[in-house]
Amino acid sequence: MAHIEITLLQDVKNSDKTAFKQLFHRYHASLFRFIVYRVHDEDLAEDIVQETFLRVWNNRSTLDPKKSFFSLIAKIGTNLCYDHFRYSEVRIRHKDTIPKPEQSHYDDPQKSQELNELQDEINRIVNEQLPEKCREIFVLSRIEGLANKEIAAILDLSRRTVENQLYRALKILKKHLKNYL
Amino acid sequence: MKNFENKLDRMMQRIWEESAKIRLPEAPDANDAWMRMEQLMDIQENESIQKTAIKSTVPVPFMKPRLVWAIAAALVLTFISPILYNTLTTTSIVVERGQFKTLTLADGSTIKLNAESTLSYKQGFGNNHRNVTLSGEAYFDVKKGEFPFIVQFGSATVEVLGTEFNIHARGTDIDVLVVEGIVKVSGTEETKDVVLTAGQKVDFVNGDNPGNLEKFELKKYPGWIYNKLILDQTNLKSVCKEIERKFNVKIEFASADLGNITVTGVIEADEFNPVMETLATLAQRSFKFEKDTYIIY
Image (cartoon, rainbow over all chains, first blue to last red; front, top):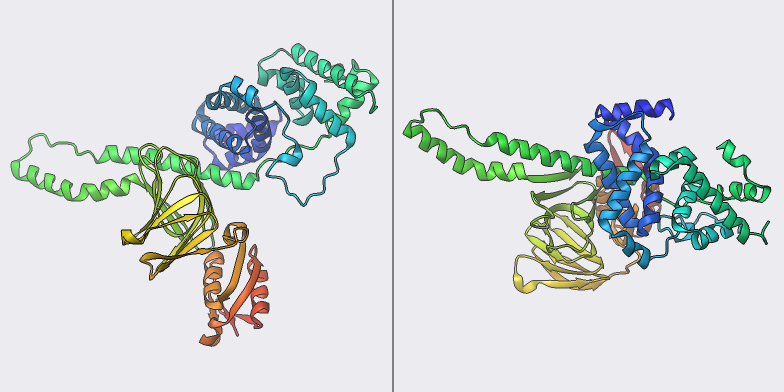
């Protein structure tokens, strides 16, 4: 983990509000995407993100600056998701999908959207063909850009499992993308 | 990671690279989110300070209280404690001139407060009531809740069940407009209560009671939350008052009758100077800066 991050976490632990603001700015967007993918409701996701950070602040004295911060907030956030919904209810009500960029209501409609056809197709296959856990790991890796080690920490899995799931995802993608490559 | 990538065949490598370029879904603006976060942190801090404050006002009994002292103490507490209790258990959020705040309340409702406005509520909001008091201007987005959401402004109240509406309550200049949902507006006389639905607004007569219902174009109001000034034959005097408040400046007219000029249009109100320039153009006048005041002539 970056050295600058360890100092930041240490400062937050010492109740430095400015440091907390920086931390918030760094992780707000990725936590939001992580949660919105689970609850499929942008307003609810934003509420959960806020509550997660609030809990971090309230329990700042227990922060371990050497541990992965995203791991911590992903865990808190996930628990809050379970509190709000019974997980199975979410699965029945919505199809698990990566929120498509066009559907987000935070989008600036004036930005030009140059969606690569291949990327579009990858997006579609990830949403429709990948099994749930596999998809979550793939999204964290390719879309959030997390390292395998970090993903393993966040989801409480072994690194081996993470790599196997990624490999599995690529095999499925390869099978469906034969026409595009 | 390198080890893993080496195991992939060419096609998989291509997919691996391409998938990293997929556009990220948008997240809400971090600055807005931080403002809400700060608000939540402040509310929490206030509530815990209030709890400690209440604890410390419980009087410690004297060892051997003399009857006279005991009665005097009891009388004093009877007079002071309701006021003290009220102050200690009320949370107020004040927005100064030139400022703007978005609050998120415990029930999930959000309130955008315009410049020079104050919103207060008593302890237990969300748990045993949803009553707030407003002076100034605010835009409400009320979530459905257990208790009716009631806003008191001056001697008037608005009761809602989950809706979006704007209250403009400055002195005797009061109006309410509804963007979504249903809202009941009451003044000093019960018989004059009105019920507003989306696309309707009502002005108060002399600041006492709601007058007649009017329709308004939903897309345009209320401009201020989108940082726009929407003018529909509005006189310069009123516009300048809003501008003064929003940017915390002083504006005067070279001659009083200039204030009566009416203007129509939509002004982007992000920064002060462009706003003044556009306004001057619309009114076909000019403005200058003298000492600490802007003068329209």
